[in-house]
Image 1: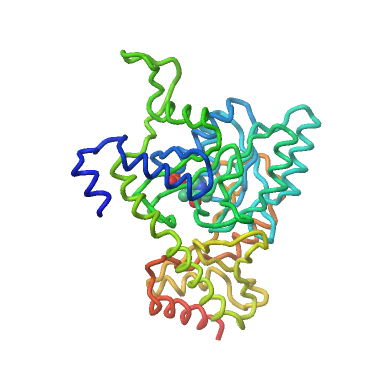
Image 2: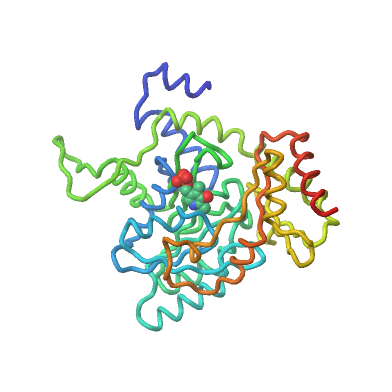
Length: 359
Ligand SMILES: *Cc1c(COP(=O)(O)O)cnc(C)c1O
């Protein structure tokens, strides 16, 4: 409220202003990237990243199959083709060995993919190092989709800060929000400059309105950035709150047959943006869907884990490598209420309803 009021009082109600600059600076510092460009959504940030990575018509871009559609859609905006890669069990994220085998096979055939979109799901970093090494060896541009992983760690660093670009989202459901917005991060100053240029209609630096390439209207407003500036100061508290929800769920479901919480990979800390688990119906005697419907009956919203991209009608026929891991996670996976504002009482209600399905 304080930052938004400041934006109004100083009359910076525009896609420019001091709070926008401050939000970018604070954000870059927080995630350990040299530059941050605030844009209107995470999807817009990914579109810019792919375009600046040189992705164009006919190119192939590797992408995690287990994700939200916005990780893959911008690949098609540029006329390129997504190639979907399955998850690994340790993190639910892209399997590095599988992805690298695909890159090597394509490189040997003389057509290495142009880029790779690596998604960090549900607050959990993927295993970045082996993927980055493989991408670097074959000239594949690494773009990290960290929309769900702000506040997470990979080693001591932030997922999103390793690739040529990282993208973040401030949509209403993410760990921090600006009502709607996103961030593109990179260590390359020239690319950051080009991103700002493309995000503001690609206007040439001359006094009149002149354009030599097609741009977009993707810049975040100073008002939205003011919200983000305030939200950033609360990030660590939000992470610990979400992690405590996960811990409470894990303890309460410990003895339940067939229930497995999303593992935390050994390479870093998850934010537990969403508390997710799987239910093996053979062991549990109850399906994920039965549990979800029982929650819904109590007016508690829980959701299946993302439906893999290679199973989406819009991507029918897309090249896919593996698929069994993400398909099982989709069949058996459930995301429980995880908001940082959720009360202990509400959480206990969720726990009681889930436990009841097993008695
Ligand atoms: C939310 C999300 C996005 C898109 O971000 P928007 O700000 O909603 O455009 C991209 N990828 C993943 C994995 C997301 O969860």
